[in-house]
Length: 85
Image (cartoon, rainbow, N blue to C red; front, side, top):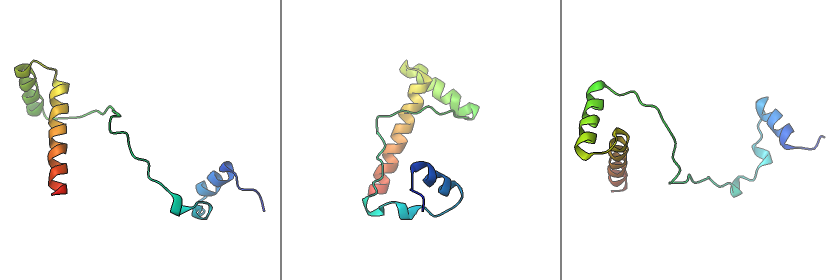
């Protein structure tokens, strides 16, 4: 029997073999995402919504991106509050 290395484990996985027997599932931990990490996305929005964000940005004297970020954070906070209630 050949020694199991990370390379042979990857080969077995890629070949569709079950590799869970090589891991101690009781010691598995889920990596928690860093809440301060940022990622960039691209959005396609209807013109009327962009115009509304632009108007709000002008009113507040801030960038459109800041208005969108604020709106998304408020939405996520409201969703989190509803789900935890």
